[in-house]
Amino acid sequence: MADFGKGDHCLLTDGKGRTYLLTLEPGSVFHFHNGMLPHDDVIGRPDGSMVVSSLGGKLVAVRPRLADYIVNMRREAQIVYPKDLGPILIWGDIAPGNTVLEAGTGSGALTMALVRAVGPEGRVISVERRDDHATHARHALEQFFGGIPPTLELRVGEVAEQIAELAPDRLVLDLPEPFGVVDAAAAGLPAGALWVSYVPTIPQVQQTTEALRGAGCFAEITSFEVLHREWNIDGRSVRPDHRMVGHTGFISIARKINPA
Image (cartoon, rainbow, N blue to C red; front, top):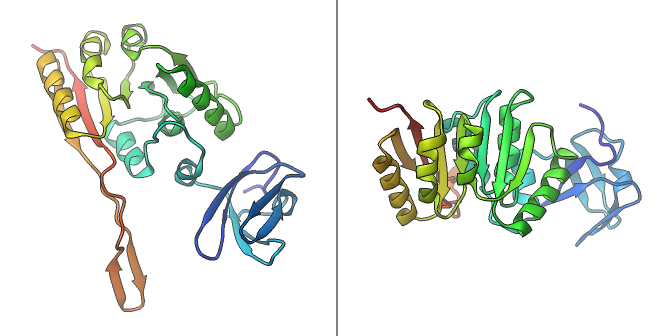
């Protein structure tokens, strides 16, 4: 892997496991509780290097994983956390070459994962109804990718109005009322397309499930949540962590069919 260069993302981790996300720029300086570190001290070094701040603080410099970037990036709207991104991609069967219609763009975290999953032959169209969130998301995506990728199109508006035009392979919704999109999805999605929605509360899940069933053209409807708990391993002392990432949201999956 190439050494760190100008414009690269870098994750610094201190001796207590605290992390700091940087975009490296010559002449810039990172300040924290244990002194300062010129970006030039990182640029030109290989991934995994140890660097030392002005006050002797040791930091490990690595290229951030997508999960690292998402949990450390600046955001205005609530993000979809890494523990839910993986199941969305797997159970939604998001794969290279897919055309994915997403709403809403929010802070861009889910969009980042979708763009990487569909690859250079796929396409992601992300729709956001709020102008302020759309502006912030565009900036976040430009920062992450170094510009808007040719496989990504950002739109402002209502996703229900886009479905018939695009006829996507996958419809991925991070909206408070995904049940309001069911009629448009029933009319505009091709047979075999997959529905994925992500909501925080059971009433939203219930309304979405009832709407999908009522449409009469969705099968394999299922909803679940993912809990993430780390374990402490220290010699013979093995125990679950006292804290965990519990409930964040419910994922609902359905498949569009042609009813007999």
